[in-house]
Length: 303
Ligand code: PMP
Image (tube, rainbow, N blue to C red; front, side, top):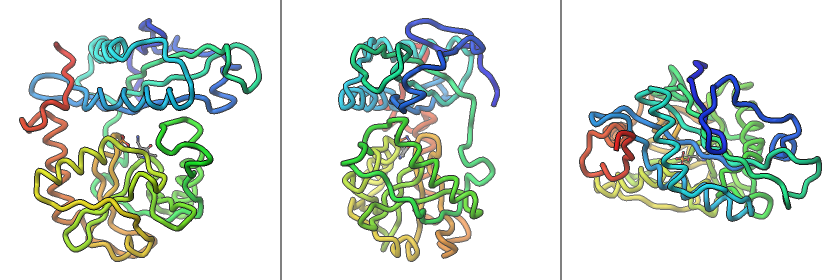
């Protein structure tokens, strides 16, 4: 990974090499962090952060659920994020804001513990690298965490141990990604992506009550589909519906729109299907500022 120059920590721009925390940081021991993943894209009007408001809204909602204090306002964090892109002199990057319980003393309680915030710019382009045009998925033997264990709606660090188990299992078996099911056997999501299938020309995705993160890319895809007159349904999906899907893709800020070409060795296609291609092309135009209809989603770094 290429190092960039600055990281924002609790109100200060710190040199990359000095962005350190104490080994007794609560979050390291107990998974007490809430984070976001956003992308800054290069557009004809300069670098722009895609749906920054929506990402910070989810960040604040998560912090409220867990009773983590954020010692900064949304405007302060948005401003810091724009400045961070400028200071690092990048035209595009991935951005990782993180709110974490800091260093005080050992013990689980978060009462009277410090809450720290950092924003980290990361230099990376394609999440699936040279597989970005089509991946293979397995159905994980690990079930997705359910709402009465940990909230799947909050982007909390602890949730990602569930994803780590599923991802490692998939890679061990030669697949690129895992799709997790709920305890009831409904399709939930990938380890860092939401799932869509196309069935009889209809775009189908699991509902939020099936253990999925309310993905901002998921929401974007649904709005683009509406504009493109592609019908969308949110409903529980069973495993075999992935095997017989006409098309399938995963989506997320990091993964963008990634076509799925086979699931558990059942072939879906040799390449992205026609609707997936159409949605993917439109998505890339939107995030890169080439579609005037959705320019409101871009937060330009040069104000
Ligand atoms: N599900 C999980 C578990 C994720 O980690 C992500 C990535 N944030 C997503 C879905 C997609 O969310 P978004 O489109 O907001 O990046």
